[in-house]
Length: 407
Image 1 (cartoon, rainbow, N blue to C red):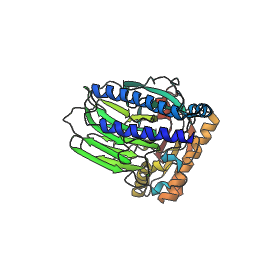
Image 2 (cartoon, rainbow, N blue to C red; image 1 turned 180 degrees about the horizontal axis):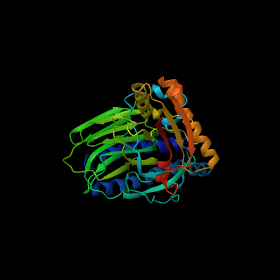
Image 3 (tube, helix red, strand yellow; image 1 turned 90 degrees about the vertical axis):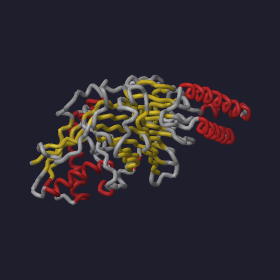
Image 4 (cartoon, one colour; image 1 turned 135 degrees about the horizontal axis):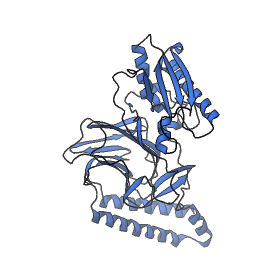
């Protein structure tokens, strides 16, 4: 069985290299003829790989080999936790690089973890551009998995002449080698022209192209492309920043305008190893704040916790750094910190969790950002002060928040 696995891996690797040599991506994307050729090539290569493995199988090993293959509707190996949360207890929030300045938008337009979709089906919140996709399950999570060697999906967003001036997009990606360029996010015009494109893992990093602007940045500490990563984009008018995990990988100060106005966001998954995405969140805003508490209150979605936990995750650093700077600039000011949850779970447990999370935020500001503890008053409201309906994922995402208010 070990020999069979080695043979399959070797053949898959050779196929991936050949496929990349034939079909390296261009700025404008693939033509219809090239897409068809790639899909046919992928099918034929997979059939050849399966046949080659069957030649060396014995009756005793065939059953085991079949059992080890990916099931059609569920992933057999559970992806590890995202890098933004797996080391939460080991990384201090204040130690996160100041280059990581991602703050999620505050008006959620689309939130999708694929739990509302049937396993094995295409998700309702997405549009298929090409390729074969299905909702899969792995490690207790739902994922959108690309079953073909190349495929592209598009977020179903409200019709508008352009994307908002300020928006953010984030999601988790999981992939296994071989994959030279397994995932791309593209800003598309009305007539399907590519304005900009960010690709992972180009030399175990993120490459970016918009018009004549091009950059490629390696992911620090990454020894290979395998595993789970959190991908983030933050648009500020005609500029765009791209992040992976807690690193800023792209800082494009001026996007190309010759191709047209971006009206759609595409995600392309193009490896022969069935890459996947989940926990997609697209939101409008938030605008850079001149005074965080100019209105006396700050509602933020940039403070994160592990599910059911009160531990403040390290990717909460950007917004907590801003709050700490405001408090330092206003030494007489005091703030209340109020946690809010959605209605998933019991009311009593949600109330307790919201209080503990607010207390954790106060503790981080005090212990890691040198803010006097007596200037912070934590509290929680659980799910009793919803700002949106809990009937939809977008509403639940809006209700999970932390609010700061002047005292």
